[in-house]
Image 1 (cartoon, rainbow, N blue to C red):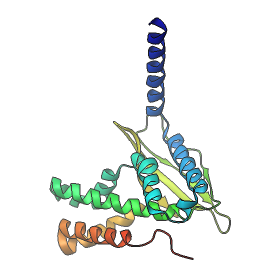
Image 2 (image 1 turned 120 degrees about the horizontal axis):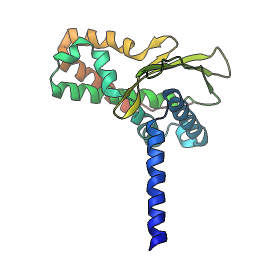
Image 3 (image 1 turned 90 degrees about the horizontal axis):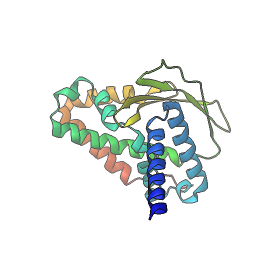
Length: 210
């Protein structure tokens, strides 16, 4: 039985080390890994390229969303109104916004073809818990596309809570929309608006037919 016990101990130690390594993964290394994994998966799967909703949703939910802090994104986009919302409203708002993000990511994935991502050296002080990872997407035709990420380090490790595309931060973009809708119909009005938008996106093909 001793060899078996040794094998179990070795496997446990290996798992513990791997878990520790993942937990200690630097934010820029994390974003690079996610980007490479997602791009390689899309390029290797014709169904995803063709707009297969089930496969795209599975990719987003398994490889992207676990590394996104949707609650933090929602709270920042809602601004001061987040603190005025009830716990139930916060839950509903976060869920609808998360669903909207899923559709946003899903639509972008179908556009991946021969793009490559180039990462810039990360500038962050030792021990920083909030950083920006800068990158650019190199396309076959046209200028490179700026794509930067803001990440915060919390109990579950580094999580993305904002994305900058071509100089516009996602949270700031939605903040004005959220404020406008809340001023018109309150928190419930915003939740309803997001739900309606998600229903529209659910009925729309992820990739327009050629």
